[in-house]
Every structure is written in C-alpha cells, then in structure tokens.
Length: 390
Image 1 (tube, rainbow, N blue to C red):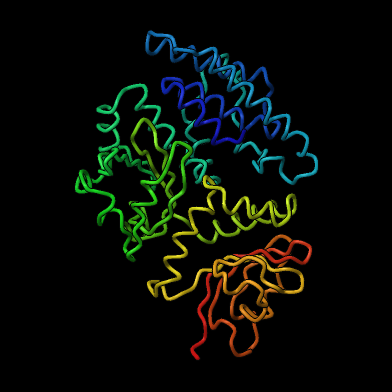
Image 2: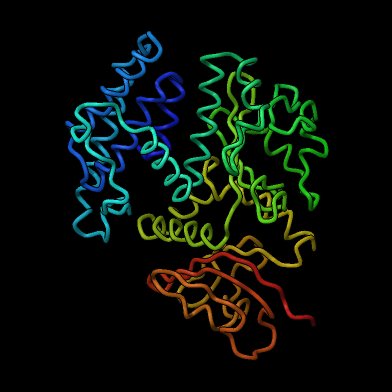
C-alpha cells in the first residue's frame, strides 16, 4: 500500500488518531531509507498514543488496532524497499538518507514523543514530492473530521480561510449540487452546475465533479490559485473528489507541467514495460487514475481556441505509426509527420522536445513542448503544440 493510502485508510477510521498516523508516517519515510528499526517505529507510535492520552485525558478509540495497521503497512513497505535499495540510487523510495531528511530515533530523546516539527517537515516533503498523494490525504482528513465531529463542525472549520493549507483547501458539495463548504464565503450556496462549476475558459467541470462516486475521481480545470504567482492567477487545478455519506468532498493542487508531465509519462512508460499496450491503456482509462480525469478536459480545450495550442498524448510504434492519440483521426499516421524528426531524440529516461529541435521542414509544429520517453523504440509522450499556418 502506498503512502497516500496509509493516510487515507487510517484517517478515514479515526480522526483523533492523527498523532499515531503522523508518527507512523514520519518513521515510515526513515524506515524505507534504512534510517530506523521496527523497534523505533513501535516506540514512536507508542509515544504518540501516550501523548494523545495525556493531553486529552482520554484514550484513542481503537488505538491498538490502528497502531497495528500502521505498523504492518510500514513493515511491508520497508521490506519491499530494502529489496531494491541496493540497486536504486538513493534507496527504494527516492528519499535522501542524509541527516537533513532523517527523522531522529525515539531513543535519542529519552523516550519522549516525536517532535511535531519533524512531523510537519515530513508532511511538507510529501506535499512537494507527491502532490496527488497529499491531495488525497487532505480529502481523507476532511471526511474523517465529518465522521468524527459532524457536518456543522466540519463546515465551520473548512469555511474559515485559516483552514487553507498553502494551495490546498477543501470544498464540500451537498446532494443537490450546492457548494456548502469553501473558504471563500462568496461561493457558499452556489450550484456547481452554474458559473462556479465553469472554469475561466468556459469548460463546465461541475458535472464531472458531481459524477464522482465513493471510489473518487480526478477532475482537472483552470481555477484561481490562492497562493499563485501572482496571487489569484488562473492555473490548471487537478481536484480529487470523493462521494461520502451523500456529500462530495474535494481538494486539489495546481499543476506544474514541468514536473507533472515527466512524472505522468514516466509512470506510463513503466506500465508499458510491464504490461505492454494493454497495461498502459488500463492506466490511462482507470476511473480513479490521474490521467483519466484529464481526458474530458483535454477534449474540451482541443475543441476550442481558448489556449491557442493543441494538447497531445500519444504512443507511437518503433516504425513511427501512431497507435494511440487523443485525436482518433491521427491513429495510423506517422509521428514524425505530426511532430517532426526531433521526436527520435527521445531517451529511455525521457526528454523535452521543442520546435527548435526540428529543422525547417514544412508542416511540423511552429512551436511545441512535448515530453517523450523511448521504450525500446516505442515512443510515449505528451505535451502541447501549435501548427504552422497553411
């Protein structure tokens, strides 16, 4: 089970076990990089439980069950990571093993509870390294608060601007499609089928949000970033929305394409290496997958001139034939005819291909930025381009 699932699974059961989860997660990161032992993990979780009991003069309901679940997940991940750490630069999960990222052993503080600052640092690291996972965690936290404290308390918390966590904030929609939870009071009471569910470029994402089920789905759209540069600028937001007890809980992060596309195509390439074309298509069409949510958004923007560019995702065979593309009409054509011969510059690790990498051939994009990975001759890529006039 991956990190975000540990967060969501445990938080959805008991919100007052947050201390247990944070302690467990902090030591999970270190355990996967060989920083702590299983005894340290047990000590950290035990200290968190004791700290909560002392601070609130009450025991955590189901604490032993929750703690054991966290221990099991940490141990499973640590074992899996140790199998690959010798052959992977920097360890199995990519975390640095240096002193700056290592969580101190519980024994170093004479058995005292873990430092909350260390927990916060670990969460900050997750936000940077895995914004999608952190988004799921934020939504899971909101649902857990609702389960533990009820709707009124949950709305009181998330309707306060103080609940905004950097670029993350929670929105809650009732069964009739009315926005009842949002840090901006001007949006409370609005129907997501109306303007509040339509992005700055006219894309009506409200119906996509309302179609989310208990398994959750990703819904991308352009929206104001509360911490953007400049503040309030419209950026592509990828929202995770889950239906829970008749309500919709959501949050999202604002996509940095320079990081997002390489990560998305990198994972796509990994799926292709393992499962071939069938494996990558299953990844692309997974209703809970991050790429599935992009499809309706890309289809809308490719059908308008709102952004003056065409978004492309493709798989091309070794002979250049396009096997998969957002535009079915391009399937069967040659990738070099579409993007120029520069696509052959792709490497196994992936590289950006721009119009400057092509020569002066007529008919190739006059501007483009596409990330392409070469998997034994098969090209997997995504990005945008504009076509030369005429």
